[in-house]
Image 1 (cartoon, rainbow, N blue to C red):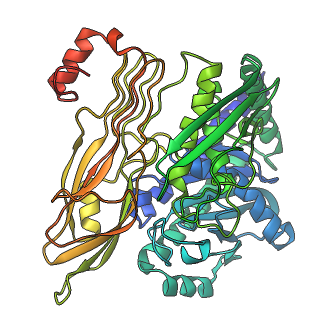
Image 2 (image 1 turned 60 degrees about the vertical axis):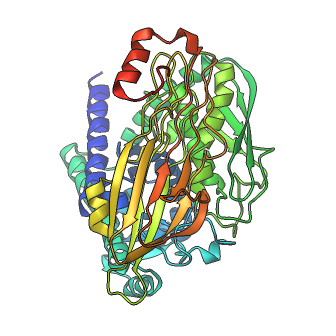
Length: 537
């Protein structure tokens, strides 16, 4: 019993180690997407490359893909070529986190010259060259610089050739290179804290702690799976796509000790950059399963192992060299797709569909021809409404499933010559129901005088709303327009002329349950707060 308590204390200590690892990245990152929005992941792994613990800050798309990426690093670098002071890097979409904008770094941890584990982290950088962050590329080769798994630092010496190549290929060299160093520092802090913990606890390696963590996690998860109904449940979803709607299909099979999600029947690989490498599809499918089946079980190698994904080549299993820059748009819809199947197996326990996909906007701002001004690349994350939950209204302007935060307006305006004139909840956007769907937002953006900007639209739910559940109504669809009323495409690079404003109307979440059963005081409160106009939700 005493040994079990000691192991539990060290497990908690390990979680504090990765939290400090992530905090280091947040405090030192150059890109607003990292330091303000938390678009990152951090974790510690045993010597076999199995994830022991993850930081709370971070996205499922980063964390769960990183859990697989470390194994690719071990295979590519080779244990015989790993030394103290090393740091490895890649942005390979199929061996990392699904697109080139995410940089993954892995660092081995040595104690007394023995390899005891690894630290890994991921962050979304503002630019990787190429066409920029958008869906217009026809292959991954157009989407930016590709960094195969390689050494960023060899025994503490930074690879200057790699740094110089980066500077020559990106528009925001200082931000990008700065983020590379921040990622490396993040892993270094994790390593220092781990070794201090091991010395304090007189641990020679992490194997006993690993087995303790995995055994208890596995037992807890298997108990939850054993209590589920057994069978196969299917669901389909239609999404906006790029130039035509895209159908997503899944079948969830629950067996005695595992859950498989198969995506056969989904749309074929797109010629546009909305395709999803299967590693990212799996990350969000597993997240959806875990949210329903075992939300309180810690996320590590053992909690992910019983969840498997299968799919032929299609938009959710796009092979190289398919364009994948905006893989998050379709990828963020995967949880709603999977949850729709689970809702059939577990009626009354699953929330309604939400806006899901982030309404990211990447702006390339420049002076109007003939005028002097400032150029800048600006990335904003914006969220629509979550679906209503059994027993609770949906959360408004909340990033589910990604979990990233929205950059403060002040931080965005400091990044480049733009002003955000309005950022407010969007009335009447939440779906009606016993419990109302979460509201979207209305956002207005304009370049400063003497400037204009192009932007990459990465929006969904403009033609296909978030559906309600158990009789709930769908949320409002979204739209992107200019201030003169011109309607813009939901995806692709477009221009906002000087003097015009870009107006984003973000979608709302679906409602849950029969609208006739919504409590009168809840409707009155909706009207009083301006969430609903016209006297009904």
